[in-house]
Image (cartoon, one colour):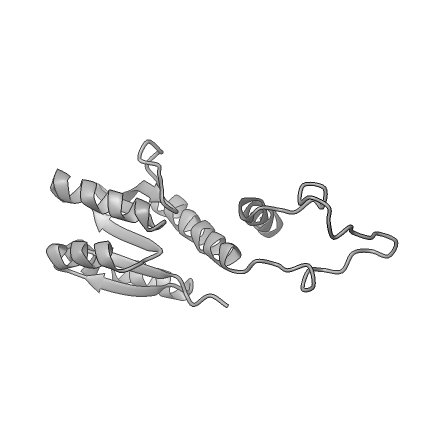
Length: 168
């Protein structure tokens, strides 16, 4: 079984976000806060974290290097941007895919996305073998040589979508 997903919270602003750290820990994340941006950038580049959170105040070269290293490691990255009453979250990378053109998220939507990400990480880490799958109803038999499409296998994305549909 996969260990708890990890999150790296980068920069001075994240040290002050104890409510965010508490939220993540309650959700099952292992948190690490690194206040020093140079140290945090080195850590993000050489250690695998499932999620990286940072403020937007970072020089362009550092931001580009961070995004590229997280895309290579299949991690996810959000930047926080302070607004009058709270902050908005800008997702730059999702599971190694560039998604910088997505919309800014309110804190509530960010919390939903973090939970969706955690569920996706759990589903991707636990492949279901034919022997451990839910038994088929009587009278239905599967051909071991049949292609996966004919067996109606679900992808991890489909399983995550179904999980959210069931919980709503």
